[in-house]
Image (cartoon, rainbow, N blue to C red):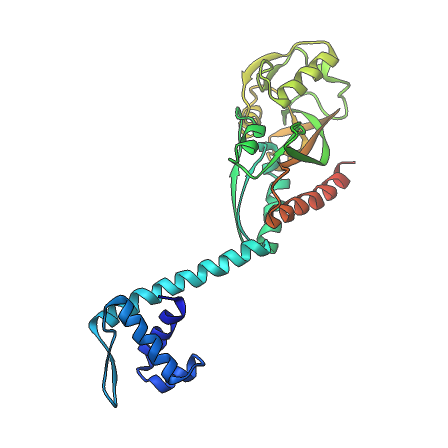
Length: 297
């Protein structure tokens, strides 16, 4: 049994006329009759009742007509989807990202995907304690945005842009951009930051910053979630250090003061992943990253 035979059957089931059907499927009437007869013999089912003037579906034929219409429709849609995947216009891409880019860079990138690849499905993950290196090498994600470059021989990385790190204080705080000298101005304040004992990139960055200014912060609350930290700061519960990107959260109850230190954003992917859709997503990410670089320099 072939798909061609099923297609012949479905057209004949609509036309109920061998000559008209033969014209529609671009074959001879005798060839069509042989194909339908071969189909019936293989199935052991009579699909049509025939006489010299009429062709009529049997009950079994009517049942298979409905089932095979659905089957061929699914087959055609699956075929078209596979072609889109081959062409790089469709498929599924799973992406890990740091929370700091969820207010600006990532939404802009997803808007590009929506415009350029409307059939692309995206899965997003914001890992905290899970290594993105492991997520990539274990094929749990396809791409990862990170604040540090992943150093692994099976993973490729590309720097997208760098941005300032900021001291974040409540809107009514005494410290402003105008009177700020350096971080030692707030060494006696309560901090809301990631745990400095953690091995994450940002915890390491914070340790280096505090070492540079020669003091250990008075950590009041520990959190790895920037959105939570911003809300706590807006309630006057402390101050923090966060990437500049969090300023795009538009939280009007906090103030950002730029520090001389920078943090970077990288995109990371498996070296052996040569799918066109992955290449396209990387290209879009790099192009958008260049525009962000111009914003921060």
